[in-house]
Length: 219
Image (cartoon, rainbow, N blue to C red; front, side):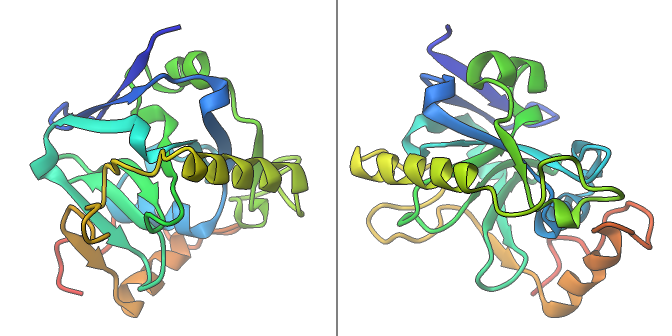
């Protein structure tokens, strides 16, 4: 197996690599939450959602991801003041990573952003081990995506704790170690901007898939 896998935005301006990819080094799930749906609609990248509004996400240790090109094109957005940090390439609105604070060390990457797309992610990390938050899925929720999946929760917690104990939180691709502050520019959506995305998401979306307020708009 290759010792690294490339991560590239749609136009090729932003490029990074994940070192030592393997099914044991990652957690891969399909998330149907309305926040993940809203984020991709905000970027105008609903093409990355599956037919039910799911996002195929590969969760990895922060230290395994490094950007080699286009760092000046990376920016972040939070859908709410306490929401996930969602990082993307400003050149073509490709998502390049979701994170919490550095104290919870993980980076979630949309599988299609890897060189070779989801097929290459299958080879490097294995197929998704499950699905979560299906109550927000578009249309009928996929089997196994609803309810409390204790095995998936335990697996995710175990990965994050393991990465923290083994010192894999640093170097972090999106935060400065000295201060814990984000490395890249960050926008927080207003309540109005977040609410404008809600009709696009969930079991019965009432608005067509389209980009909403520009991320460059002042919060």
